[in-house]
Length: 102
Image (cartoon, rainbow, N blue to C red; front, side, top):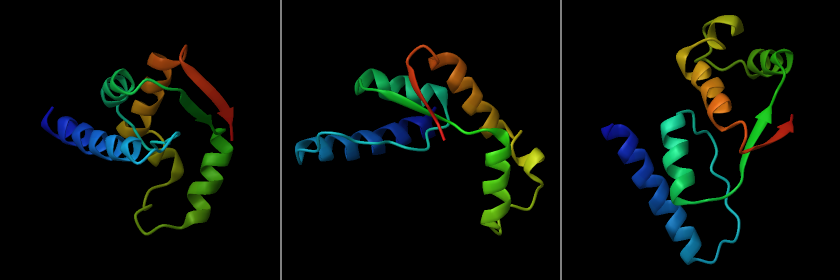
């Protein structure tokens, strides 16, 4: 849990600073752990947006970026625990999500 607490502390510090500076809307992107999203949304209520990207489009983007770190075929990379956790987020929060097809 220590890393999760560090992540949340860092996010909270940034969000609080932005709010103090008068930011009215803020996007936090890339959360891939349901526990972090739960705690963050409890502390900072707001809309949770889910970008729904079809498998074919995710594969096209994965293959076209040609990143050095992408050493595995898309089918393997798309089924790693971190990607599966995204589906867990969807199942936990689906009633609260605003879904955007991308």
